[in-house]
Length: 407
Ligand code: SAH
Image (tube, rainbow, N blue to C red; front, side, top):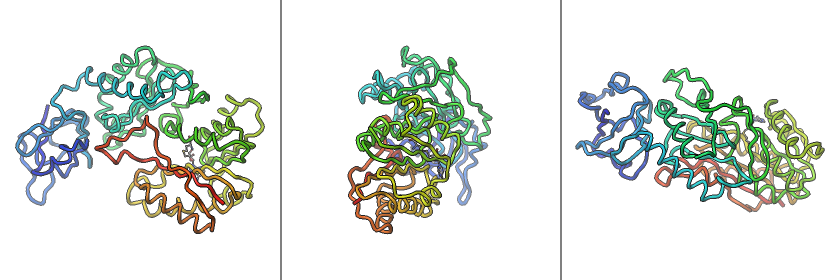
């Protein structure tokens, strides 16, 4: 295994268990010459293949960590701070800890729930790896070349650790792997195969389209927030904007909403929400779905809703897009706030990692002021316990939401 030597002083973040090594921290690799002043190291010809396991050492050669090598701004994603071999048993240990945590928080081994995130990247000390479980099928997603390289060993370890809970592993990394690595990866089953795709979340059924759906097929991260919404739904006229598979809509139907309208610009999403409503509430005429642009719908709708959900896609994918994104959050919230009935409740979210809790709250505050509405914050929401945040990696916090009571 090759060793990556850091510049003097660049070991500090690793000593605090932060799991990334940035390219600028590297002094040299093995016995190669360090870069001359004003020059950069040539990572493409450094003798390490992308996805290979490397050791990281400080300027004195002292071992710091072992992890996956990749060309980019993050060159090493740390798997272990111990000098241990990364073999089948390593993956099994990590996956077992992840499973034990999901059992402890009550999302796994729960007869009413077989939909949960088993591995949340850095949050589970497995940077670059996401695994969502839907009944007997796991959908595995690699965000790094290293996790892609090790996919078969991981899938096998997963089946063993899950000990009969799982039969199939579907690998869905076509759009998540770095395109520059030119891996040409296609989605497909690594283990087993199935068309059975109905999963259970808190006693509600959902069709999961892992073949064509966004992410791993479902937004598992809104489970707790959907439950909270259910408790506010009784007798309310609900508008679920950016509904995708209709998670919030199905919960508000169960909560006793008077009517539920779901909106998404994608016709495919509208088809999915209709299927999911039919699966849980066949023939129930309280629900209607609209394939429309959210901004247009909000402009043209009346003031008939008293519970509105705004769960848009990430407006800021990078820090550069931040200012524009904050304006977007203000604008969409303002439109909803202008129309919501007095005594109404707004569930509003941002899943942009680049937008902080404070920035999001300021954007919503501005929207309230511009709409001229009095608002109380009832709840401050975040990602659920199966999307844990590694305390040494605060960047893992991404989902935030507010529940407002509007006078
Ligand atoms: N609330 C959903 C997840 C939302 S994902 C859930 O709980 O599962 C974001 C959704 O917004 C996607 O389905 C996407 O199709 C939709 N979308 C993106 N831009 C939109 C727009 N301008 N108008 C309406 N929907 C939009």
